[in-house]
Amino acid sequence: MDDLRARLATVIAIPVTPFNTDGSVDWDNHAALVRRLVDHGVQVVTPNGNTSEFYALSPAEARRAVESAVAAAGGRAEVMAGVGLDTAGAVAAALHARDAGAGSVMVHQPVHPYRSAEGWIDYHRAIAESVPELGVVLYIRDERVSGEQIRRLADTCANVVGVKYALPDSVRFASVARDAGLDRFAWIAGLAELYAPGYWATGAVGFTSGLVNVVPQLSLALLETLRGGDYPKAMKVWESARTFEELRAADASADNVSVVKEALAQLGLSTRTVRPPSRLLPAAVRDTIGELIAQWRTEGRL
Figure 1 (cartoon, rainbow, N blue to C red):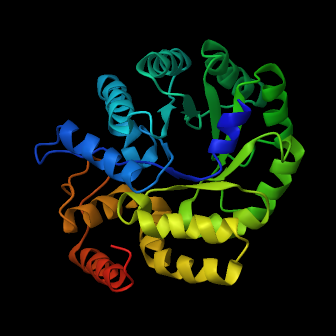
Figure 2: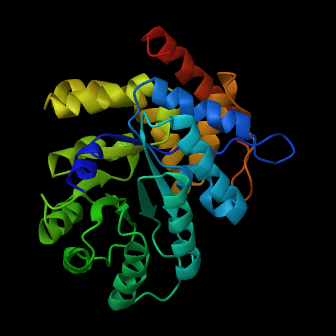
């Protein structure tokens, strides 16, 4: 598990799930997009993350997404499968991920409206104990989850090795990470490039990314500057990603997936089709994305 913890200190790509215009999944395109990520040097891929439209996929589609990612990665990158929803379903998904060849799972924040601290621990314990041979990464989007809860969970489940922290509060993150154990887990900035520099300064060792689907060189450049401790240079890279990420974060991330898919469509890499409750973007936003693509071409990132 120490080796996996070290490998998670990187850009963790959340690949889109490309759809045909009729709304069905284009599996050939899915494999091509994962291969493109790995060919550019991405070392961790998370099928069935939020940018994968996890909650809009059927269980059969989610299983196939893991199988597709494992085959496309071909052993060149860690495949960390997203699992979640009800406990039994999450356990079944984790077992499938293990059998399909994934090396780890990311457990989505429970969506149940009533969550106790003990229940949160029990939920994650059930999943982690079902696949002791896989690394487990927690996805934290609830400010009520404390460092003490994370530490208690890991005390009984040694395969809990990482935390994807996705709250826009770097002070809270710093406190939670230190209460849980800063060196005990791989701490991942879960709000992508927009928050990566601030979280890096307080203990993150990697960050998740949807932008990496579009312009891998940009995300990887940000990683390298942060690793080198060159914050002025990192912020110059950050400026190049800023508008795109602000479009994704607007209105409580309503267009998180749509922005990524629009950019891929404009690059001729996929369709822009999304499933409800996501939407196709209005013309003004699409034009802005086109301008960003032109900018990245000028910068030599595409």
